[in-house]
Length: 113
Ligand code: DGP
Image (cartoon, rainbow, N blue to C red; front, side, top):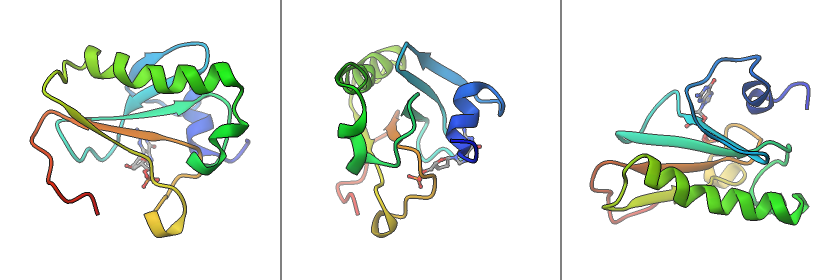
């Protein structure tokens, strides 16, 4: 997608602080961190959000979900972490390339809303 911010980050056209990469996924630090660790995990193939995750090839879906635990271990989040993926306007999704927020490094609030 020519006009997608995260596609440009994946291609390296826009710089990012890379945390993890494999054949199917890329992860980088959020520009506006909401926790001591705030990583954005994205599939390299463009899909809009979690509602479209089934459009990814099965191997890419598997890699995406497997990457969460790898990143958490790499970031030493052994005490826990939160995974969030905003999907659509009610969830305030602002970048329309599927991304999974991985948040940790502090006690999270019980409320998720
Ligand atoms: P969401 O609101 O769920 O669509 O989250 C989008 C996130 O993307 C938000 O937490 C801020 C982050 N973000 C936006 N632009 C950039 C950027 O250019 N670089 C990085 N690293 N993160 C960005």
